[in-house]
Length: 223
Image 1: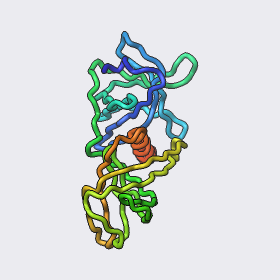
Image 2: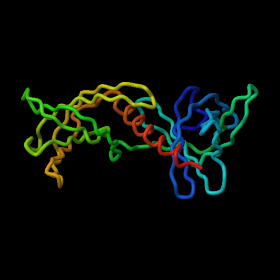
Image 3: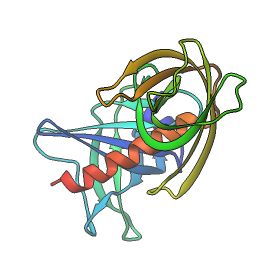
Image 4: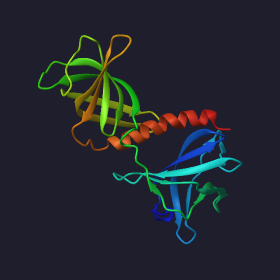
C-alpha cells in the first residue's frame, strides 16, 4: 500500500523516535494528495501548542488501521507542520515507499488487569479471577491457589472494559483452552489460554487500549 491510498477519516498512530525514546501519538487523515504521494493529517497538541515532529534524530513511522486486515506501517515518513487557509494546523505526511504489514498478533499482549469470574468446562460454578493480559489469540487469568484445573481445560471469561481516552465500552466472551500453568511467588496461579475461536472486535479493542496507555506516557515525556 502507498500512503496516498489511505482515505479521509482513517485513524493513524504516529510512532516517534527521539534520542532513543519511543513516543506514540494519534491522528487522523484529513485529505489526500495522490500526485505528491502525500496525506494531510490532524495536528497533535500538547498544552495548547502543536507538536512538530522535525529535528535532529527524529524519526517518524506511521501506522494506519485497515479494518480487520493487518495494520500497515509506513517507515521514515517525511512530515511538515502546516497552517491551512482556514487557519487550522495539520501535518503533511509524505513517502514514496510502500507500507509493510504490521503483524503483532503472535507476540503482542495488552495488559488488562480487570477482575472477572471464570467458568471451566460444563461446570456452572464461577471462580473469581483477574484477566491479566489479552492478545489476539489468547489470554491469561490469575486465580487463587485453591482454584486448580489441568492443561486442556476449556475456560470461559467475560471481559468488560471501558477505555477512558475513547469513552468506548467493550464486552467480550472469551473461550480458551489452557495451554500454560504457572505458579507465582505469592502462591496464586496463572493460566495461559489459547482462544479457540476468532473474537470480533478484539483487535480494535487491543489497539485502542494500548494506544491510550502509550498516549498518556507520551504526552508526559515529549519535549
